[in-house]
Length: 317
Image (tube, rainbow, N blue to C red):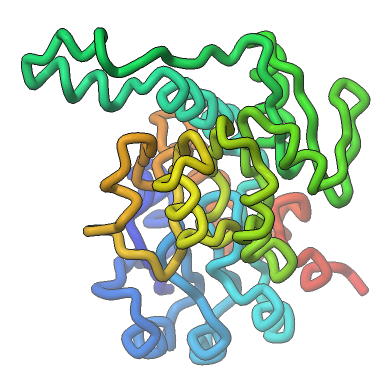
């Protein structure tokens, strides 16, 4: 029984799957290759970059399930999987603590200009402290949380612990510990904006040029969600012209260059390569969670419905 990995996963999760079938790592993740590689696979697992569109899923004649080692499932065509009767396994809640911590790290790094100061001092320029200007403290500032799922809620809690006033916008969630604001009002009030919405048709491009124009010139944008939520060209224009103070980014737009990106030229941008969830504990946990459910299905057992993105495919009815 073949289990196809589109990307590497934690060794413990790989060993678990090896006890069920033959684990094969894809040589490439382009659709032309995957339609052949998946043809005889009983399961396919991806982390973040390997995509499972309808054409690839339909080619999996022996597929019994697909899985994402992580939280977001925007790289899997869930609608197509549902039509094909394939459970989409994922690991909701597994990344909450570490991604929220990463968001706070980016806030602090931008507010205190940590990346530039580190670079200058290591280049022998201790005197940079005399000319770089003053940093900004988070205490007393307004943290605006865009999206109050598990991660957004934890970001809000950490913001409160830093002495910040926390406001939030969410299409569905409410939490009396924080102040709800309509989306435009949230953007206008934000000293720091934390982007925590899932990527959907509704949220793609949500932070458009017009939306970013509502924000204060002193505001900081932090994105640990998905890059396609923000109009990246508009973000660059705002940051380079002084209409936004800074940005901390763990994600960039799907069609954005990883190298020679204009954003990388800006001193007021701190960027990390989509590693917010990649800590030792969390990486292992999210991979084992998804791999464990795949193993259950391949053993002929019913998966935990809480870990199935499309639970209707496993319902008794």
